[in-house]
Length: 433
Image (cartoon, rainbow, N blue to C red; front, side):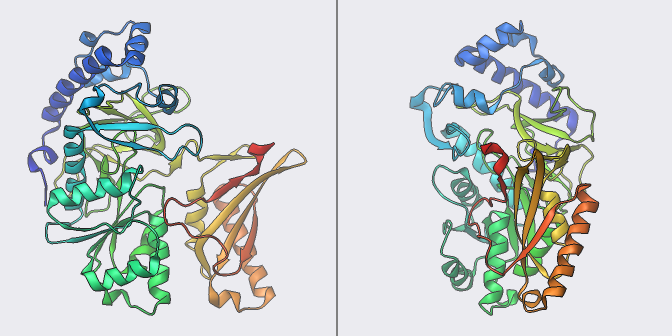
């Protein structure tokens, strides 16, 4: 099934020609309308007429999140404010908010990208789409809402919170597609079980989850807990929002909407473009956006690209599920550690829940890391000796995966806070020292 078969199955040579045409127009647009880009291009001796093919993309400078903050709020906009019809922004937890704008055409393109994503996982106009992403400045809620509307599906704009009410809506409204963060999907699955409801009593069949890294093991837990097929959707507000890429029903990588976004994989240290198939930092160039067309935007997400056509029939490049972010990576005693590695280990150990928290500290100039993990109710009722043995098992499994020794502390059920949005998995106390 396709939403836009002509584009989604286009021959690669034809797609590259389309990309090149749109890239040339976008480079000219930002050069003429965005002072930062004009100054940066001039510094490197680059003029719009120098960009002729997609292969010339590597000659353009990168754009960073700091650029959006340095030009806050509208300094990177390439369209006049009278043409901007919506503004979103990041949470700004690590500095000034990053502000993004959309023209009417930008909103239409974004909605089609999400509609394509929904069709690729089996969605249709007959579905009832339950949206538990937050509405507001965060792009998740409205992004999925507009896409489902464009598809012609019925939208239930629940937003976040009031989990008991969400479950009642599942039952009473007959929701068939759930859209939220994977951590909240885990929480909903846990709440469904505790309420005594069997997944068979719900009409849910598809989950579209994004906004945070999650593992294959977590996907399997969600699918089991809610009786659905769970799919990745990828995006970031600076580039568009959810819908930049999404799984198809094959669940083998995320199809990038290449007629709107050109992906690259670079070495995060040198900035050099890496050979096909290698893992590195994901970079995107927007080639159809009018209000905020970012050039070679560094996402900080770690991924790789698959150019082989997918069994679903789509010819667009696939990105692998991001395994983490360069800015989420913890360096513990010289070893690179991603929270997703910890999650992957825990979800393969019986007797513990998928809820955990990592605390990093520095004691006598030595980095320490402790992982708090919730016990399942059955393990909680066991003897102290059994619990201690389980802690040793987890510690050994983490050592085998991370190649460093970390502390493990099993805690009582329900003691680690749940998240209705993006989960906060790490406290790094070294930053305060």
